Length: 131
Image (cartoon, rainbow, N blue to C red; front, side, top):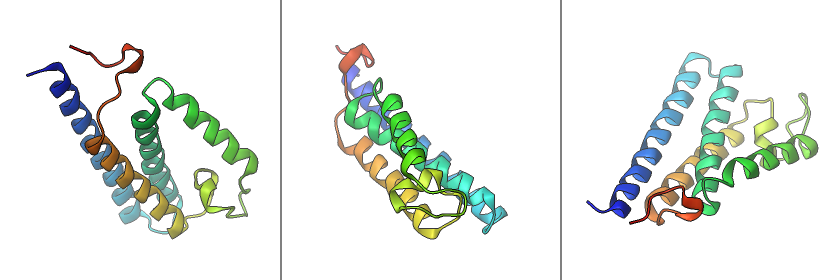
C-alpha cells in the first residue's frame, strides 16, 4: 500500500470518527435535556469539530487552530451577549439553544465530512508523509 493511500485512509478514518463522536455527543445531549444547557454544549462540540476539520482540509493542519482561534475572538467581539441571540454566524458564543444554531453546526459537520472524503490530503509543512 502506497503512502498516499495510507494517508487517504487515515483522513477517511479521522472524518468518520469525528462525525460519529460529534453526532453521538449531539444526540446524547439532546436526549438527556432537550431544552437545557447540554444542547448548547453538544451543538458547540459538533460545530467546533466541524470548523476545525474544514479548516484543516482547506488551509492545512498547522494553520487551522490559529484561524479557529481568530474566528472565535471575532465572534466574541462582534457577537451577542448572554441575553441576546446575536447574528447566526456568531453561534459559538450564543447562549441560547436555537434550532438554527444547531442546524448550522450539523451542516458544518456534513460539509467537513464531504471535504475530508472528496478532496486530496494536504501535504504542506511535512505534516503528512510523502513517498
